[in-house]
Length: 114
Image 1 (cartoon, helix red, strand yellow):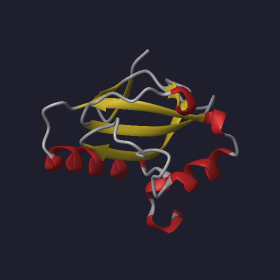
Image 2 (tube, helix red, strand yellow):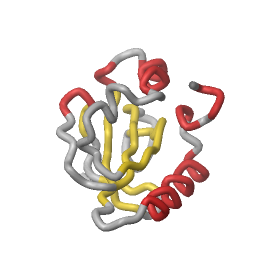
Image 3 (spheres, helix red, strand yellow):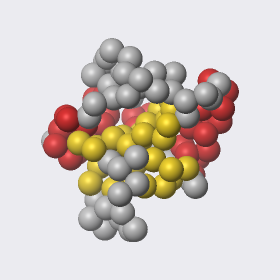
Image 4 (cartoon, one colour):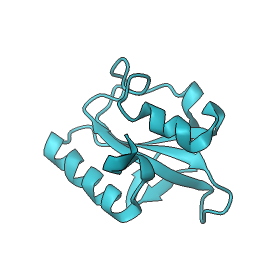
Protein backbone atom coordinates (compact mmCIF):
# COMPACT_ATOMS: atom_id res chain seq x y z
CA UNK A 1 0.00 0.00 0.00
CA UNK A 2 1.55 3.26 -1.12
CA UNK A 3 0.79 6.53 0.61
CA UNK A 4 0.37 10.04 -0.75
CA UNK A 5 1.42 13.32 0.83
CA UNK A 6 0.67 16.53 -1.11
CA UNK A 7 0.00 14.55 -4.30
CA UNK A 8 3.45 12.93 -4.05
CA UNK A 9 3.66 9.15 -4.05
CA UNK A 10 5.55 7.59 -1.14
CA UNK A 11 6.34 3.93 -0.62
CA UNK A 12 4.43 1.77 1.80
CA UNK A 13 5.41 2.75 5.35
CA UNK A 14 7.94 0.38 6.91
CA UNK A 15 9.03 0.08 10.51
CA UNK A 16 12.09 2.22 10.98
CA UNK A 17 13.78 -0.63 12.85
CA UNK A 18 13.68 -2.88 9.78
CA UNK A 19 14.08 -0.28 7.01
CA UNK A 20 16.53 -1.08 4.22
CA UNK A 21 17.34 2.32 2.71
CA UNK A 22 17.75 2.48 -1.06
CA UNK A 23 20.62 4.21 -2.80
CA UNK A 24 18.29 6.90 -4.06
CA UNK A 25 17.67 10.63 -3.81
CA UNK A 26 14.33 11.77 -2.52
CA UNK A 27 12.13 12.79 0.35
CA UNK A 28 11.54 10.64 3.41
CA UNK A 29 8.70 10.86 5.88
CA UNK A 30 9.07 9.74 9.48
CA UNK A 31 5.65 8.54 10.59
CA UNK A 32 3.88 7.34 13.71
CA UNK A 33 1.04 4.88 13.71
CA UNK A 34 -2.22 6.72 14.31
CA UNK A 35 -5.43 4.68 14.00
CA UNK A 36 -7.51 7.89 13.97
CA UNK A 37 -5.82 9.17 10.78
CA UNK A 38 -7.61 8.56 7.51
CA UNK A 39 -7.39 7.29 4.86
CA UNK A 40 -4.20 5.64 6.17
CA UNK A 41 -3.38 5.09 9.86
CA UNK A 42 -0.14 7.13 9.89
CA UNK A 43 0.73 10.68 10.84
CA UNK A 44 3.90 12.41 9.59
CA UNK A 45 6.12 13.82 12.32
CA UNK A 46 9.08 14.74 10.09
CA UNK A 47 9.90 15.27 6.40
CA UNK A 48 13.47 15.33 5.16
CA UNK A 49 15.30 15.33 1.85
CA UNK A 50 18.52 13.67 0.85
CA UNK A 51 20.67 12.88 -2.14
CA UNK A 52 21.19 9.34 -0.84
CA UNK A 53 18.82 7.59 1.57
CA UNK A 54 21.45 4.90 2.16
CA UNK A 55 23.95 7.44 3.51
CA UNK A 56 25.46 5.97 6.69
CA UNK A 57 23.96 7.53 9.81
CA UNK A 58 21.20 9.39 7.96
CA UNK A 59 18.63 8.19 10.48
CA UNK A 60 20.63 7.08 13.53
CA UNK A 61 22.65 10.31 13.74
CA UNK A 62 19.97 12.68 12.49
CA UNK A 63 19.70 15.91 14.52
CA UNK A 64 15.92 15.34 14.99
CA UNK A 65 16.30 11.71 16.04
CA UNK A 66 15.48 12.45 19.70
CA UNK A 67 12.31 14.31 18.73
CA UNK A 68 11.06 11.32 16.74
CA UNK A 69 11.42 9.00 19.74
CA UNK A 70 9.97 11.56 22.12
CA UNK A 71 6.76 11.63 20.04
CA UNK A 72 6.20 7.89 20.28
CA UNK A 73 7.74 6.56 23.44
CA UNK A 74 8.62 3.41 21.49
CA UNK A 75 10.92 2.70 18.56
CA UNK A 76 8.31 0.21 17.31
CA UNK A 77 5.81 2.98 16.58
CA UNK A 78 8.16 4.76 14.17
CA UNK A 79 7.76 4.18 10.44
CA UNK A 80 9.36 5.58 7.32
CA UNK A 81 8.08 6.11 3.78
CA UNK A 82 10.10 7.23 0.76
CA UNK A 83 9.33 9.46 -2.20
CA UNK A 84 11.89 8.50 -4.83
CA UNK A 85 13.32 11.36 -6.88
CA UNK A 86 16.27 9.72 -8.67
CA UNK A 87 17.29 12.52 -11.05
CA UNK A 88 16.26 15.44 -8.90
CA UNK A 89 18.33 18.46 -7.97
CA UNK A 90 18.74 19.59 -4.35
CA UNK A 91 16.50 22.58 -5.16
CA UNK A 92 13.70 20.32 -6.41
CA UNK A 93 13.84 18.16 -3.29
CA UNK A 94 14.00 21.19 -1.01
CA UNK A 95 10.97 22.71 -2.75
CA UNK A 96 8.89 19.57 -2.18
CA UNK A 97 10.16 19.21 1.39
CA UNK A 98 9.13 22.82 2.13
CA UNK A 99 5.69 22.23 0.57
CA UNK A 100 5.15 19.09 2.67
CA UNK A 101 6.24 20.81 5.89
CA UNK A 102 3.99 23.77 5.18
CA UNK A 103 0.98 21.58 4.44
CA UNK A 104 1.35 18.95 7.19
CA UNK A 105 3.21 20.91 9.90
CA UNK A 106 5.00 17.85 11.33
CA UNK A 107 5.97 18.38 14.94
CA UNK A 108 9.63 17.44 14.53
CA UNK A 109 10.17 19.93 11.69
CA UNK A 110 9.15 22.78 14.00
CA UNK A 111 12.22 24.79 15.14
CA UNK A 112 11.17 24.65 18.79
CA UNK A 113 11.26 20.82 18.95
CA UNK A 114 15.01 20.27 18.66
